[in-house]
Image 1 (cartoon, rainbow, N blue to C red):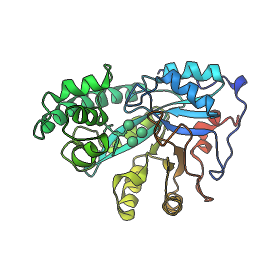
Image 2: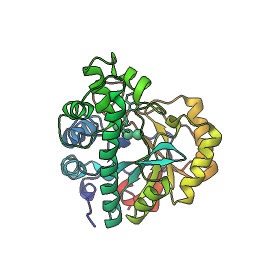
Image 3: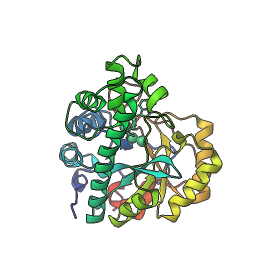
Image 4: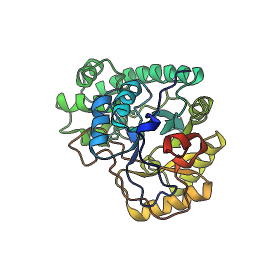
Length: 307
Ligand code: AMP
Ligand code: MN
Ligand code: MN
Ligand code: MN
């Protein structure tokens, strides 16, 4: 088992509150250059510190490769860091993202799972490239690799950038809208493992599974109920109550839904790069509700500073 240290307990100054309402200084959904983020893990840690955050989780897509570098920098700043990742999976043919919060690092089953995800991502990239040939993107794999600018696993944003660079679409937004967004030809889900499999890996590592941005899958409330039930059945325990900016009414209703299912609530910006609308720590304020913060989960007590 590889264990990544959280921040030096001596350096930790803040204890997280046990309510979501009024919470600040925490962001449990952040990306770095280990996946499709634009800041290195160390630069991201610097930015989080500069923005006054005290508790963060690095949640790169399907990898924990950035965690060690981030941990070193976070220790330097006295910032509490949770090892984490945002894992890709599918449920009823819908692509879902599950944030794995990993207070004990990984396990051999989760390590093997991350290998499965890496090869799924690789196979999927080939399939996406193949499908995009039909809309006028030749040599998509090489072009996406060039846009990525490193050997990290490719993601849909790299294909979006390739479509823009090749002049097929005017901008990334259009690339997703026409070709890569949910249900479009470049939205390839068949290689991803099932929801229950991924949640099983997280549990095996002593981690807490969190449904990422539950409002961003185009599901009806009823469908979301079914998804949460399947997630809980598999051992899932939390969902993001707030992801970046959210409509207050929608958040309020989501809080009721999390409360109904007994899910812990998490918060995160889903930050990818500076210069956009979001920064680390940018989230709409969580409403007053009965939803317990995910950091009150017994496994995260040390991270929260409560012991
Ligand atoms: P992947 O993990 O390869 O399936 O890529 C998913 C990523 O694509 C998300 O984490 C976002 O970073 C990005 N993404 C998804 N939808 C959009 C969109 N509509 N516009 C821009 N980026 C998006
Ligand atoms: Mn992303
Ligand atoms: Mn996501
Ligand atoms: Mn994300």
